Image (cartoon, rainbow, N blue to C red; front, side, top):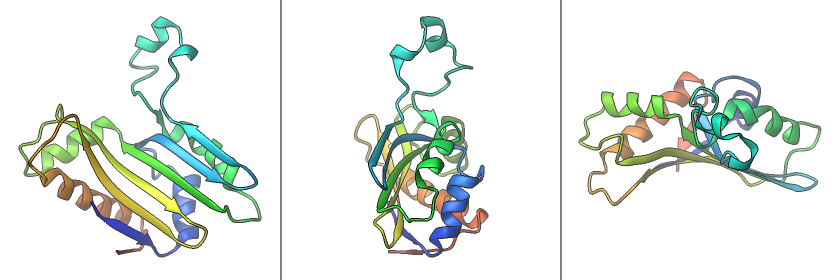
Length: 167
């Protein structure tokens, strides 16, 4: 787990909300505080879908909504002349990309053991931090996936030209 302070918040927000840069993620949860506090639960709602739709992996490949699906909603809640009071986004890397990280890394941890590669974006009104995390289905002694994920996030930010400092 690492904590990164984003140096240029406006640039980061442009990449997050107005580009496809983060579209390889799914949204677990969003909380946006402006004139109200808006909470978005990224879990897909079973009651919304027919049985056929729910089981159709092309229509609904993940348990969470993709960032691409909810990005316009979050953007509409944040845009405007006033800066939000605060926000928090919890994003999960899509499973296909998780496979890539595990395959390229030196780890004995399997995809089946890993529940999620996550990062949390927090804005408190003055600073923006990104915190990485890994989740497993059960306890795992091997912490190599933590380092692989931390490195992947650093590379992702570098590729997106997002400057940060480690806290």
